[in-house]
Length: 172
Image (cartoon, rainbow, N blue to C red; front, top):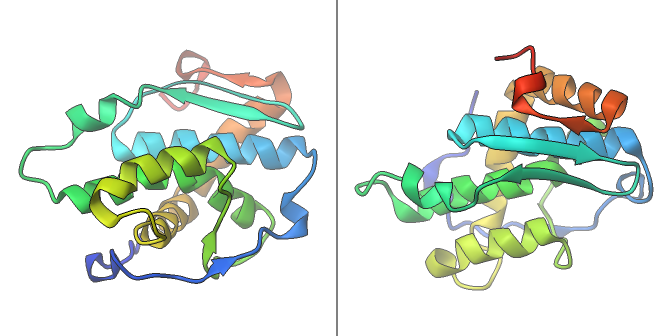
């Protein structure tokens, strides 16, 4: 897996429009979105507690306060914030992968809760602009590309049952 180089942490990437194929009701798209959040949580050492998906909405549940406890005191704080933000950007990046589209720039969704929470994590280190978001989305893309079978496994459960919990998982 090739993660983006830390030297690009503060690089500003262009904003790109959300493709039309990634809009509107679509259970498979939403299931992959939520499955990606879970896969990135696992990669980051966070504990997913549940996920749900319908054709219009979804939710991947976890304890955001875990982030502070998971970061060693001597760890690069801006890098840690960007990696944590990758968990939040994972859903939209998974939608891109699911649609078979390349990442070409920051997928900007200012009204989404995922975007708003990523901004809260990134702002103390990068300000209120786009710095950090591109790195986070590129990190999510690298991890998801590597762990795509895991995303598909969780998405399949979400499509079949509408919910996923770690204890229901054959992965463990």
